[in-house]
Length: 148
Ligand SMILES: [Zn+2]
Image (cartoon, rainbow, N blue to C red; front, top):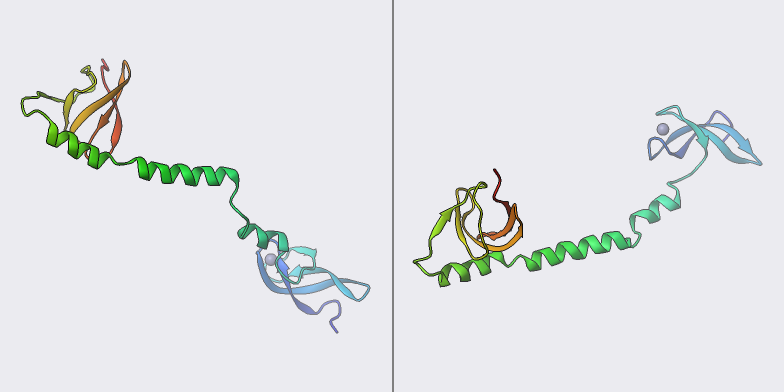
């Protein structure tokens, strides 16, 4: 039977581990208050990690997490840019003039641009007077244009 001043294994909320503690108080024969030998914190005696913390690990995903997960999956599915780009590249009229991409220039849908990093790109959509979606070989990228 342990008495006050004895060592006892208890869960420390600060260290978040079951560690050796010193019994400070006993109520009705049960250990009530302990002091952590590691960090010195005094707290109520808990033999092990609180159940609430444990179940938090295996809880079902929240709605927000589910949506984020689905959005990520949808993004992967939607990224068929390489295939689309390949089709465009093959079917492109070889006489089409390819413009060197510059943020200062203005483009229109269906223009073909050449970007110094991303390579050949097809202007898919004019998003605003200063931006456009361009299909490059790896992805559709939002590109700036018409910037003075
Ligand atoms: Zn501790």
